Length: 149
Length: 119
Image (cartoon, rainbow over all chains, first blue to last red):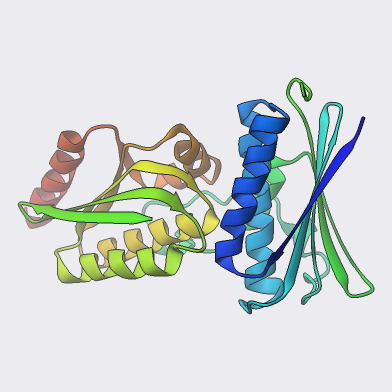
């Protein structure tokens, strides 16, 4: 059986904490997912919504962010939707892995640009679509032992 | 996010507890940079109480590390939770951050680096 939970919040950093609490609570108490899966899904969601707040809505509060968590046997799908500025075409595909910072070269000590790479590390599949004014980041992860709820 | 600050023989020790995420980042970054600016750039950042961090939290660590180095000092990390350690290793930041499990060793490292710089 597939179950879906939808969560709508305003585009404010404080609301990401509400989403975190709700997502972790559902994953731990209702679905009893393995800790490694919860950590990965949680981090991917936070990074995805951070990107929406910071980039799609350019830091403006008052806009809608929708998160959908879909639990199928042995798989978790996560969708983060917004109505803001779409990500540049090819941006997601261009993100590969983390550049290794050089202790001797301060120019490699980057303070930004890790969010999408973190999402790709946490989830097996990451896809992005901008259509009819709605942007959707789709993320999917195979669960370690399947849901036990 | 709770931040406590003390100073031992010229080395600033700042303990954070809570979740270092986007909602807290502006305030934490400002406070840590102010501490580095006011001191001599030698900082132990105790993260034992930080159970979760995202990429915006990592950006604070890198910003403060850069500020400390620019001042001729250094920033070392103390007491990482498994979740935070995993994130730092995933993003390869362990190549620039020195990470310790106990405060005495972290303090000794900063005192040693100060002697090296002076010598």
